[in-house]
Amino acid sequence: TAYSIALEIMEGSRNYQNIPAYIPVLKFIGAMLFTIWSVYALMKTRENIRAKYSIPEESCKGYEDLVCSMCCSCCVVAQM
Image (cartoon, rainbow, N blue to C red):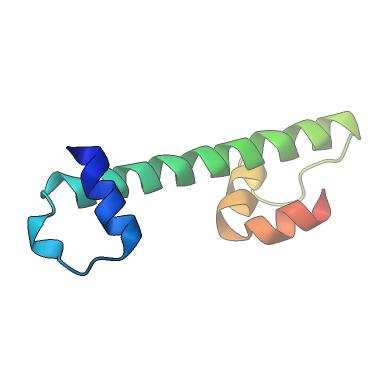
């Protein structure tokens, strides 16, 4: 089952020949969905903080929150 395969991977067994092909695909899809969700959540949080404190956008009018969240998320978190 997928659970037993995940346990083998977590235990550090180096026998990767028995891993089904869909496991790396699922890991990739999960990583991409998490990345998209993280950028979206950070973008919406920054947008709400700017609206609350009436902070105008200076560059990339209309897309500043998205661009900042994608390119330098650590800076965005530090600004909040």
